[in-house]
Length: 106
Image (tube, rainbow, N blue to C red; front, side, top):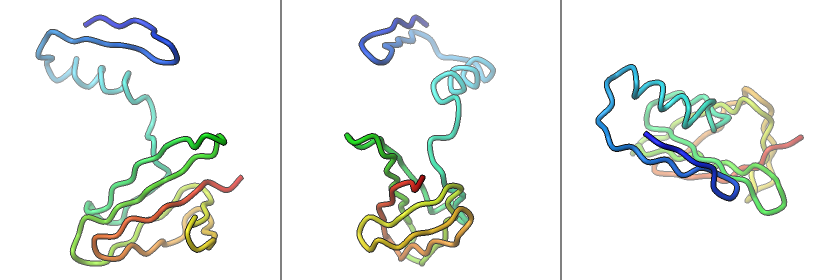
């Protein structure tokens, strides 16, 4: 493995098949902390996050199931489409196959 800084990030190249220990260490290095403020109640819920150009953190929880699901944010959020606010720990409903867009509230 080799890695170098470039612009605001890194370029990393791996020319190996890592064993379990090396793979775990590599993933901890690549993603040192969870990037999502969600606790999904079911495995059908995933979430991605990004930083908007104005610096706000935006979150996109997805429900990949044909059934409704619930996720709980660990930070206060507001739904960007409806304006509804959710405190940390609230139960956020996700419809079947739904995606929602939230912004962190500070």
